[in-house]
Image: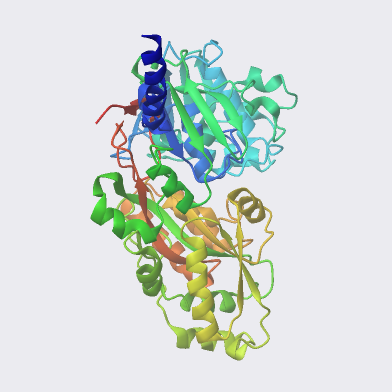
Length: 536
């Protein structure tokens, strides 16, 4: 009997060795762990300092504003605030906070925390790039510019722990949607104080052992260049609705690697999809492919403080020499459309009349007028691009187009996202590929990028006329008249060409059949508390 058992054991070992191993995606289904490709290593988790969309994608798991945005409608829905009301003149808003709102350390989240957070954002010492999104608040712009120093004059007042009154400079009907942006999120002032000056950037408060948030998840692990893990927050006011136990974000810069990871069961969701694989998935695995509408503009950014782009004629010439139809056909393959304006069409009823045609002859004339006939005398231009799915390939098309049509020599410099963002912010570039995703559905989220004092105006371009248009639009309550002012602003923007539009995005990505509650989102962000995993 013992001999027979000895003979059988090797066969059992062989059978066990041949058994199919559980993939991480399968294990995630069992443990409630969502595995997400997130393109880039996070640069910042302080919600008031976030500049990259991929960082924002993580921040919405860790923090929550007064409102959140519904994926399908892009409209504000209750977050920390359970309800709100505006005065008849639109200048005063009262938000009523949930009695159950807490920080992840168990402290009550109060209206006073919101006021302290917004004062921090607007403090010039913090130099928050997105501070301008708070400018609808009374005296916010003056405080941020250092023209006022008494922050008690800010139009934000805690009437009691649960009641927050906001006073505006002018009516802002999209205010609830604004409060869903990370720069409006509360940060715990007591947690910040433990690590010194609250206005110091790159504070240790955002490390996993230190971060105190108020979102549906907490930061459990951050292994640079490997993964970032968030775990369910039991102190979250709506914790009963959160069905995921964890989310793991992977900073996978290469779309090809990410696609292979998906096929190998390493992730449930990819950030994107190589366009070369689009047709294959449409044909062979359409259930895994998602093509979602996306409020995104991809463009070229000129550093207008550096020659030769100090001359608007050179900038305009290069913009006219972009064959957007050729780029759409050869690079996008259905994952985007040619952009001849900066603002995507039908953005809250606004479609730009201004348009940039492809006109090589006009481009050659402008270059000659600027003193560079046939491109002679121009230095070799370096185009910095984020090392993503589209930008390097678009750059290669531009390189060929400009050499053939204008005699312009172009070199390409692919960069990881963190370096690319830092270079943009410090104007450490001459020409770059860039992109912008709307913060909410309104043309102002695109056009106010280029006001001279804007924290995200990374072109060096300043125009008093443009600033006046944007200010007039902000002070105009009539929607039709407001849209007409935006039309004038966009005409000026495209004529002066601190940027050159290239294409409007469509989000192409892969999704595992077990992922439920992942709605198409025009703004690209999701409420993770609505997402769960279920066996197909």
